[in-house]
Structures are given as structure tokens and as C-alpha cells.
Length: 118
Image 1 (cartoon, rainbow, N blue to C red):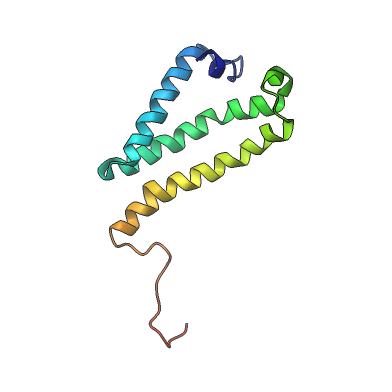
Image 2 (cartoon, rainbow, N blue to C red; image 1 turned 90 degrees about the vertical axis):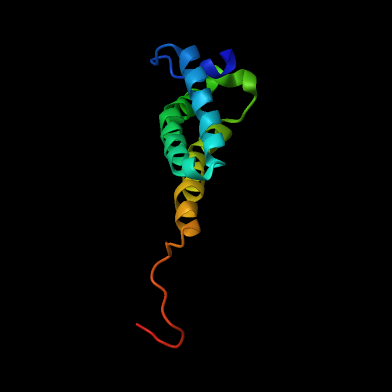
């Protein structure tokens, strides 16, 4: 837990508690994605969690000297930032778009009969 607590910006209070809370939320959200009736709620919670932990990723990228013992090049810390967007999209696809597809909704737009245009 101490490893993750040090990744948090120093302005945040109670880093150990925040790590425990975010870890529990992450596990609960992951499990919730597996349970169809909870999938949308779990996806919303995981997306909120990714937004909430984004400042920690920015902190790591801006202060690579604090994490020199990890032996990671600075570009790796910056590469993590756009990955958050990819993860948010992926969770959205699983939790929202997937639920809509399963219910028969056409989320790609209206379809046109073959041979007709416009």
C-alpha cells in the first residue's frame, strides 16, 4: 500500500485511505462489469475512478525524479496519460454500449435498406 500511497500528489489528504478506497472501488467495479444488471453502474463508477486518479498520473509525469527508483523512462510516465482515455472508452463500450447492443438498440445509427440511398 505504501507504494501506491507515494504516487499521490502530496496535497491530497490521507493517502493510505485513498489507496484503500480506490482499490476497493476498482475491484468492485471490475466485478460489477461481470454482472449484467450492474454493468452500467459499474462502468459509471470505474469511469469516475479513472477521472479521479488522473491527477496522480499527471503528478508522476511531472515529477519523474520522485520515482527514479522505478527505473522508468519519463516517456513511459507521459504515455500513461492518454491510456486513461483509452480505458475510459473501453469501459464505456463494455458498460454502456454493450448493454445497449444486447438490448437490441442500434447505436451505430439508422440502417438503410439495400439499394436505397439518401
